[in-house]
Length: 312
Image 1 (cartoon, helix red, strand yellow):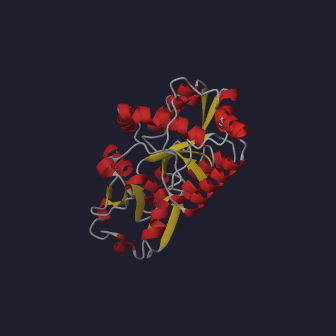
Image 2 (cartoon, rainbow, N blue to C red):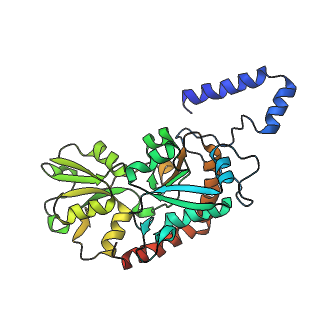
């Protein structure tokens, strides 16, 4: 546990000891100072709330606002199949589909409120939540220390197993010339702006000609295909799904290249404004449900097929 957390908990204890017994009892009954939904040392909430009866009467923070307004506002970048993408055959809110969008709908359903999906560029998703324009960010978010420092993150979901991590994607025609990070000297590389892969590029690739931060993963794939860049850092699972769904794209993942995180950082995350532990604890309750039942992976497979049908 970090020093500032020890200090914080010591301060709470000292404050409690200074209260009269009657005041302390009243505080505990009201739930004031409740630490059940504190962030752990990695700055994400592990605890889960019972969601079977909807938003509880003693809800706090943004969770109260959602209950009172009857609307859950979710920020997403809808260009990352199979988690979130647009079905051109549908209109309005129903056009936003994917495994994450199904998860968002289930969270709203368990809350007993309407879901409002708010599409935007990936680089704007977390800002929209931090500034109160949206309640949650559900957009295939990976854990990063920077995100954890600025937002309150959920526990992980969407565990990719053997395909967990990130790697380099190149044109298959360049497989003899680009075999790893050392082959990127003098070449143009890319990653999606604001993504974990952008951070990994900064941490692991130091010699290249130009690094381009593109607005969407689709733009990254297109830049590779049209020759604007020579290599890109991508999520292994999503990159594999794209290549399998588009056999004529001419792209491949570089064998033997893998960038992975520690186990406690695995899985995608849902983000709320910093300090909204109760809201994320409710989200965690729904995450527990879909992970334990296998429902999330079923959605992932279902929408992988749908994305392939749409040529995404």
